[in-house]
Every structure is written in structure tokens, then in C-alpha cells.
Image 1 (tube, one colour):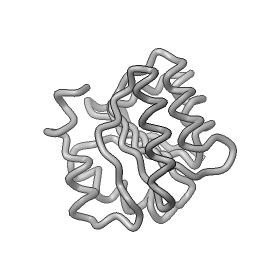
Image 2 (image 1 turned 135 degrees about the vertical axis):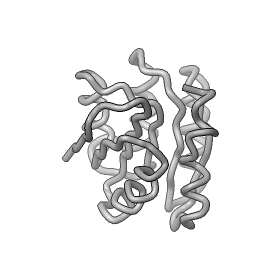
Image 3 (image 1 turned 90 degrees about the vertical axis):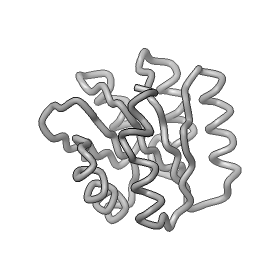
Length: 136
């Protein structure tokens, strides 16, 4: 289920079927100034982008039901949204390698890869707006 806060200058889309990871990510992102939208799979994200959502950063899990991370990168590449993407995986790095290659083929910028479990310090660094702003 997607949730979105009020509009702001920095919009983060967290796409992960793990509710706890989404919750922790939200608690890290909001104090950094992000307005967070949460999605449990890539299908929800793509539907929201087809509507009015224009994220400035997407944090995307690789293994999810319906539309996984690799398929979601392909779907993002097929539409007009261009924003940095942070890949997240608890599985083999091979998934992120394939997603990165597909993203490059679609001119998408994969700016980071996080391995679960993600230390809070590492998550904060990946979501640092100063790091992302020049890419938005």
C-alpha cells in the first residue's frame, strides 16, 4: 500500500516489501528533509509515477512480489522519470549488477547499493540530501 506525505522539495520513494525496513528508512529520511512515499512493490511505484508522483530519489529493493527491482528499473527506464536510484538487496550482489546494467542502458543513475542489513550510518549517508541534490 502506498502512502505519501505532503508535497515538498525533496521526495523519496521507498520501494520494499519489508515493512520494518520501510519504517526504519522513513525514520532516517524524514529528519534529513525528505517527504517519503512508501510502496510494497514496483507495480505500486510505477502506478504512482503514472499518476502525479515525481520522486527526487528512489530507494529500491531487488526482491519483491509482483514487480521486482530489476523489472522495476526496466519499467522506470521506459517512462519519463529520471532521478537517482539507490538499490537495496539482502541477496546476492548479482541482482544489483543486473539492475545497474539495465539502468545504464536506460540512462538511469544508480548512485548507491546497500546490502541488508543496512547499518543506520550507511543508510543516512545514502539518503544525505547534499549527496543527492546535484543529481536531481
